[in-house]
Length: 414
Picture (cartoon, rainbow, N blue to C red):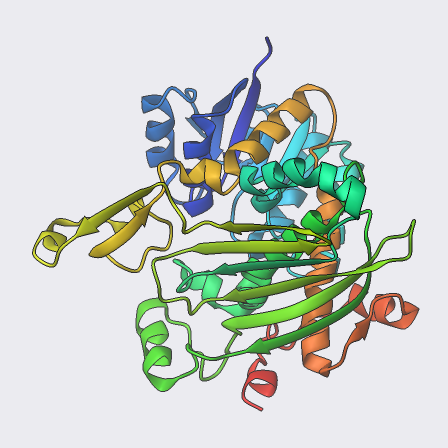
């Protein structure tokens, strides 16, 4: 059976997490790596774990000429330029068949549309990596509840939350590079996951039509003097001058085009969750039934006392974004699978080998970007945004949030 030769463009946190996931993915090998930093270490990991014999390339063009598909896993502010290089390589004759992009597809609607058009013009298959839609915990719950939905009707409210204590890298904290704050970073997950949960069985991922957006963005922890100093000292990012939101919450109203019924997708995201570590929490309510997912409920727990804690080298081996190295700790035996990384990667591999786009293609990624930017606009204007209004749609095409422009003080300190 044919194997997909996959190349990683980038060798940072998400690339390493996907390499871990690849240990559980069939018909795929890591054939190449292009990265500014960390490429050699990732290649050694791949060889040690029999994921392939990847060569570390010096240019985007080279990797495109030696792989069936490439995954863009570089920081947000680099992705359009990387996609342009991919398109040039294909135009020059590279035999590339597909391209993957980690969320978000773009920092603005303009960037996301540019990514879609470049891939389309290059006739590349696409897969947008939004891992939470691939979480088995969510999809198994939905499968279990489909008979109830047939009798009682679909979910009417879904709530999705992602929270941790803050990103690892300086560029994530910088709103001008990342594209905003926690809403840009994690709101794309929560909005997409809640919409997915609400979508009736057998319908496309974009079946429910967005009709209204409410949102509030706030700076609750990292704007305080003590924590501003921490950010400045550790990452060189000054939230006294260019702040981003560390808390965002909102409601997306969606309409079933066949029945006219309105449903609600509530999302909440924060960089101030100072508990065990990363928490994904989703629930949904339907007539007579419900579901709930909490990633911090694990079948495995460990306890580490104060004296023994001195020997802990890396708490994140137990849980992503872990903030503690002692006490009663949740440990996930298979985080890559829990969060949906294995299933999203398997979907891309199987889809590309079959000559089709992934379940979530670049067009879907562009719509998620559009919804995130609508949330920023709603928060800035302090209104419920009518997403069916042609004027709003036109404004969103070229919209850049004040936070992403480095002018967050105008909306977060007022």
